[in-house]
Amino acid sequence: MLQNFSYQAPETLKDLYALLKKSNGKATILAGGTDLLVNMHNNWISPESLIDIKKIPDLKGVTFNPKTGLSIGATRGHDTKRKFTYAKEFLSHGNQLSERMY
Image 1 (tube, helix red, strand yellow):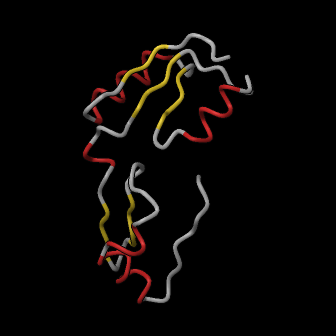
Image 2: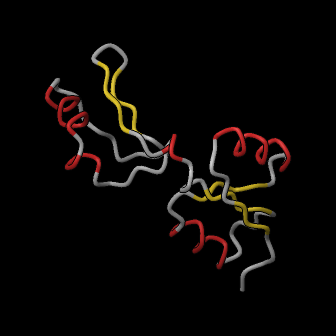
Image 3: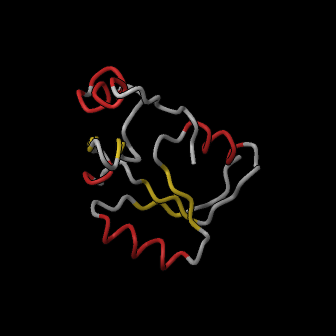
Protein backbone atom coordinates (compact mmCIF):
# COMPACT_ATOMS: atom_id res chain seq x y z
CA MET A 1 0.00 0.00 0.00
CA LEU A 2 1.30 3.43 -0.91
CA GLN A 3 1.70 6.05 1.78
CA ASN A 4 0.22 9.52 1.37
CA PHE A 5 2.31 11.98 -0.62
CA SER A 6 1.83 15.24 -2.45
CA TYR A 7 2.19 15.44 -6.22
CA GLN A 8 3.39 18.45 -8.18
CA ALA A 9 4.09 18.84 -11.90
CA PRO A 10 5.97 22.10 -12.55
CA GLU A 11 6.16 23.38 -16.11
CA THR A 12 9.34 25.45 -15.81
CA LEU A 13 12.81 24.95 -14.35
CA LYS A 14 12.22 27.98 -12.11
CA ASP A 15 9.13 26.33 -10.61
CA LEU A 16 11.01 23.03 -10.23
CA TYR A 17 13.85 24.73 -8.33
CA ALA A 18 11.34 26.47 -6.04
CA LEU A 19 9.59 23.16 -5.25
CA LEU A 20 12.89 21.42 -4.55
CA LYS A 21 14.00 24.22 -2.23
CA LYS A 22 10.67 24.16 -0.41
CA SER A 23 10.78 20.37 0.03
CA ASN A 24 13.99 20.47 2.14
CA GLY A 25 15.23 17.22 0.60
CA LYS A 26 12.00 15.30 1.23
CA ALA A 27 10.84 15.20 -2.40
CA THR A 28 11.57 12.63 -5.08
CA ILE A 29 11.82 13.43 -8.77
CA LEU A 30 9.48 11.53 -11.08
CA ALA A 31 10.76 11.31 -14.66
CA GLY A 32 9.76 7.84 -15.84
CA GLY A 33 8.37 6.31 -12.74
CA THR A 34 8.35 2.55 -13.09
CA ASP A 35 11.12 1.81 -10.56
CA LEU A 36 10.01 4.64 -8.31
CA LEU A 37 6.46 3.35 -8.02
CA VAL A 38 7.63 -0.22 -7.37
CA ASN A 39 9.95 1.06 -4.63
CA MET A 40 7.13 3.07 -3.07
CA HIS A 41 4.71 0.13 -3.28
CA ASN A 42 7.24 -2.09 -1.47
CA ASN A 43 7.79 0.63 1.15
CA TRP A 44 11.49 0.85 0.26
CA ILE A 45 11.14 4.61 -0.13
CA SER A 46 8.50 6.95 1.21
CA PRO A 47 8.83 10.46 -0.19
CA GLU A 48 6.63 13.17 1.23
CA SER A 49 6.34 14.66 -2.23
CA LEU A 50 6.68 13.55 -5.85
CA ILE A 51 7.75 16.17 -8.35
CA ASP A 52 6.92 15.14 -11.91
CA ILE A 53 9.37 16.79 -14.33
CA LYS A 54 7.90 15.46 -17.59
CA LYS A 55 6.07 18.73 -18.38
CA ILE A 56 9.25 20.85 -18.39
CA PRO A 57 10.26 21.51 -22.02
CA ASP A 58 13.87 22.38 -21.10
CA LEU A 59 14.39 18.79 -19.90
CA LYS A 60 13.29 17.16 -23.17
CA GLY A 61 16.02 18.45 -25.45
CA VAL A 62 18.91 16.75 -27.16
CA THR A 63 21.90 18.82 -28.29
CA PHE A 64 25.36 18.06 -29.59
CA ASN A 65 28.48 20.21 -29.65
CA PRO A 66 31.78 18.63 -30.77
CA LYS A 67 33.63 20.52 -28.03
CA THR A 68 31.30 19.89 -25.10
CA GLY A 69 29.63 16.66 -26.19
CA LEU A 70 26.13 15.30 -26.20
CA SER A 71 23.48 16.59 -23.81
CA ILE A 72 20.33 14.52 -23.35
CA GLY A 73 17.53 16.02 -21.29
CA ALA A 74 16.40 14.21 -18.15
CA THR A 75 13.00 13.33 -19.59
CA ARG A 76 14.26 12.14 -22.97
CA GLY A 77 13.46 8.48 -23.57
CA HIS A 78 15.57 5.57 -24.74
CA ASP A 79 14.64 6.39 -28.35
CA THR A 80 17.38 9.03 -28.38
CA LYS A 81 19.98 6.84 -30.08
CA ARG A 82 17.71 6.04 -33.01
CA LYS A 83 15.78 9.24 -33.55
CA PHE A 84 18.19 12.10 -33.09
CA THR A 85 20.78 13.24 -35.58
CA TYR A 86 22.76 14.70 -32.67
CA ALA A 87 23.12 11.29 -31.07
CA LYS A 88 24.13 9.74 -34.39
CA GLU A 89 26.74 12.48 -34.85
CA PHE A 90 28.03 11.91 -31.32
CA LEU A 91 28.34 8.20 -31.99
CA SER A 92 30.09 8.86 -35.30
CA HIS A 93 32.94 10.51 -33.34
CA GLY A 94 33.69 7.14 -31.70
CA ASN A 95 31.73 7.90 -28.53
CA GLN A 96 29.30 5.58 -26.79
CA LEU A 97 26.06 6.36 -25.01
CA SER A 98 25.95 4.97 -21.50
CA GLU A 99 22.84 3.32 -20.15
CA ARG A 100 23.89 4.24 -16.59
CA MET A 101 21.86 6.67 -14.56
CA TYR A 102 23.75 9.23 -12.49
